[in-house]
Amino acid sequence: MANEHKKEEDIQQHLAQLTSEQAGDSIILETRNLKKYYPIRRGFNPFQRNGQQYVRAVDDVSIKVPKGKTVAILGESGCGKTTLAKAIALLSPPTSGEIIFNGQSLTFGKKKKKVDYKKLYREMQMVFQDPDSSLDPTLKVKDSIAEPCKRLLTLGKGEDIETFVMKSLKAVGLSAMHAERIPAHLSGGQKQRVAIARAIAPQPKIVILDEPTSALDASVQAQILNLLLDLQKNFNLTYLIITHNISVAEYLSDILIVMYAGNVVEYGPSDSVISKPRHPYTITLISAAPIPNPWKRNLLNTEIRGEVPSAINPPSGCKFHPRCTYAGKRCSEEAPELKEISPGHFVSCHFAEKTA
Ligand SMILES: Nc1ncnc2c1ncn2[C@@H]1O[C@H](COP(=O)(O)OP(=O)(O)O)[C@@H](O)[C@H]1O
Ligand code: SF4
Ligand SMILES: [Mg+2]
Image (cartoon, rainbow, N blue to C red; front, side, top):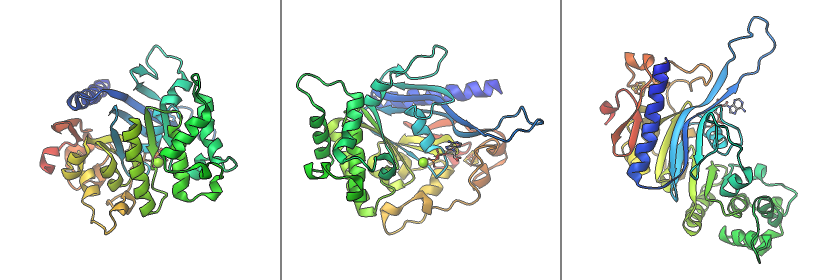
C-alpha cells in the first residue's frame, strides 16, 4: 500500500516536471500531491470513536501553471474544483501536500514556514462566481476596489490608492461614473467587472477565477471572457480558471486539466485534450451532443450514465469504473497511473491506447 502510494507520488511529480519542461515556460505556481480532506462531523457515538471518515474533495493533485498562461480546470459539479482553488489560495488550508508559488513553498513540508499573507494576496487574487457575495453591498465601487489596495499595497513616493482604483476601473471598461455607485445599481456583468477590477487593482501576478462567467447571460459571458483575455495581455497575468463549461475552457486556456472525483484524469495542451480526448470521462464530456449555442456547452447539460461517485467512499481502483463503458476487470482493482500519451498530454486510464 505504502509502495503504491509512493509510486503514485513519483508519477505525479514526474508528470508535473515533464509538462513544464516541455512547455519551456517558467512555472509560477505548482501543487505537489495536494490533498484536502474534510472530516465528517458526527454525533457522539461511543462505539465509533475511531474510524473518522473524510470527504476526499481533492485527492492528490499535482499541477504546474506556467507564467503568463491560462490553465483551466474542468470537471462536473462536486469534483473538487473550488476546493482546489481555495486550498491553493490558502483560504481553506490543505490537508497535505505542497504549494509552490513564485519559487517559494507556502506549505507544509517538515519545516513549516510562516506564510506572509500580505505578500501572497498582493500577488495572488481570486474572482468568484457570484459578485453579489464577493462585493460588499454597502460600499461604493471605488471603495470596494480601494479596500484590497489599502490592505495589501505599500505605496511608493507619489503613489496614491485612487490612482490604482481608477486604473483598474478603466482597465475593466468602467468609468468614474461607475465608481460612485453601489453594487445594487449595476448590472450583473458590471458587478463582475468590479470584482475583476478589485482583483487586479493590487497588481497581482496570478488570478484564480472560479466559474467567473457562469452566473452571466451568454452575451455578457462572451464580453467578460474577452475582457479577461485583454487584461492578461495588458497586465501580463497568469490565470487559473475553474469551469464546468467546455467552451469557456477552450476559449481561454492554454492547458486543460480534467478533474474527476478529486483527481486529475487528463492533462495537457487544451487543443490536444479537446480535439483528441483520450480518457473515457473526457471523451464523454466532449462528444456530448453539440447544442446550438456553444456558450451553453455546459457540463451541467451533459449526462453521463450512473451516479456521481461518493467523495467519502469512492469506488475502488479507477474511480470512474462504475460509469465507464470501457471498464474491464482490472479497472475496479487497480488505480490507473497518469501516462504521457503524446507530448505533454497525460491520461489516467488502463486502456488509454484503445481510446485513440
Ligand atoms: N466545507 C466543506 N465541508 C465538507 N465537504 C465539503 C466542503 N466544501 C466542499 N465539500 C465537498 O467537497 C466536494 C468537492 O466540492 P467542491 O470543491 O465545491 O466541488 P466543485 O467546485 O467541483 O463543484 C463535494 O463532495 C463537496 O460536497
Ligand atoms: S481505467 Fe478503466 S474504468 Fe478507468 S477510465 Fe480507463 S477504462 Fe474506464
Ligand atoms: Mg465550485
